[in-house]
Length: 200
Image (cartoon, rainbow, N blue to C red; front, side, top):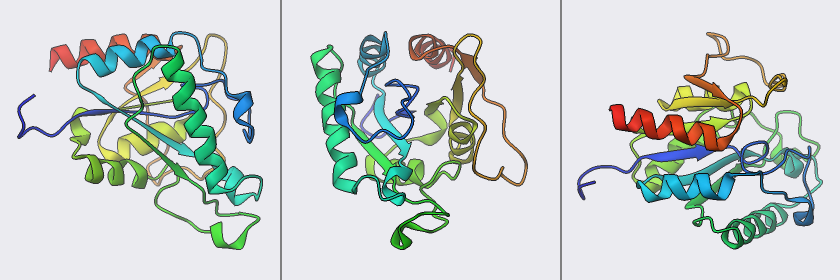
């Protein structure tokens, strides 16, 4: 990649993609990295992708955890990944807002809460990313909608026999978009990303 080219990223939802989805996670001790994730992240990093997490964290809006508490969970996640041989995540963006938040200061319709693409667009500005060469990997339709709205290719993780959780957010005006690819886990998604990149 020449110095004049903008970098590409793989945007990753946190729960259900990197770690087990345990609902409203408030305790770092409950983090469980999913099988194959460290090696999958290593493969992406080796070919030059930035690794950026984009996560809705309504635990803040619900008053269950402070923003600093979410940061502590993410610091522990970085430690777990490093211990398992993964490269460091380049950045983690999380949205603390919710339109029906218990805490008034977080009760708003923001641009950073997926399905809106604000967090991806901010990451692109701060890290010099080419969104059209980037990918969004998530386990919910809100992840896919955010990725599409930002101009990324999108991958929906759908473990065998499971349907993605129904979105609680209202659908975009044009309806929920279809992902570019559906597969059961991050290692399979990485295979497709690398094949897609080779074909570009």
